[in-house]
Image 1 (spheres, rainbow, N blue to C red):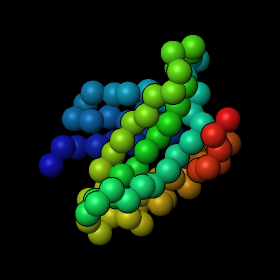
Image 2: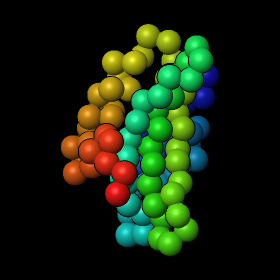
Image 3: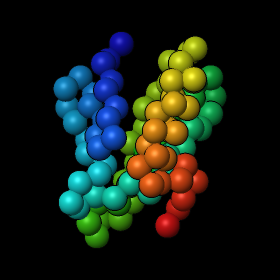
Image 4: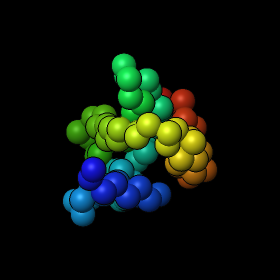
Length: 85
């Protein structure tokens, strides 16, 4: 199982980071989506003028509560979980 660390600015997969909040990137939506037998945490952001990017993190079975907490914490950064501006 890969190690995933989610902070208020980035997601790291086994030490490789993908930044969604910095001088060039703006977080605008966080969503939990059911995809078959697994749930996915989706973090949508814009990076400069390159359009919308999404980071998808699989949610292990029994960890949906933690995913909801992450969603709420990121929403606390001034972003609504359903804000699609």
